[in-house]
Length: 235
Image (cartoon, rainbow, N blue to C red; front, top):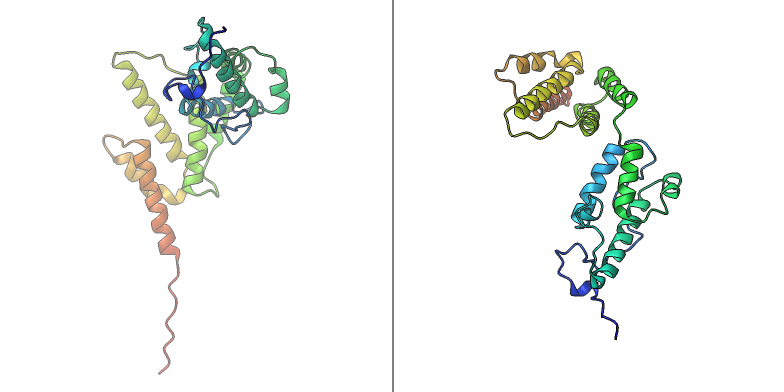
């Protein structure tokens, strides 16, 4: 008699081969489809989603096709499921070009090779956008979000190797201070006072702490700009 193949329900939920009853090929793991731009943000969102599904090992090379025939069927099923999830997040043109890949790992690598490679033009575009970005008519939250998006994308293509010495902390502090200066330089002139107060602090606060100070100043301005209702008392 042929060897019985265990069902997904018989597998522990912590096992990558486990599929929840709600999992299906048509699921959308990220809301915005990838159309060839913003690969770093798409990859980050997909990495989080696949990790939450306990399926990241299918794309990062940690869980290759098993030799045990009793596990192979379940592996193929999960692999196909992950492929479907990735294809669902791609534009029609891109998904059509990678439709016949054999594994989720190969699909992931092909997308990385095609769109994830660091290149001078992309780096220049991001740096130029960062240089030109100012607050303008935006509120502080919107302005900071635009900055943070560019910072994160730059970080995704300009990673620093992990080290155990103190150099990594020094580089992280340098980058933090540089981002703070970029944030402060783009603020409108009405924030000159709070900007000056921040620059006087020794040592400099983190970018998130300084953001909170500027937002607090913004809120105070909104309160002061509200005109009180006049009291017309007729005796």
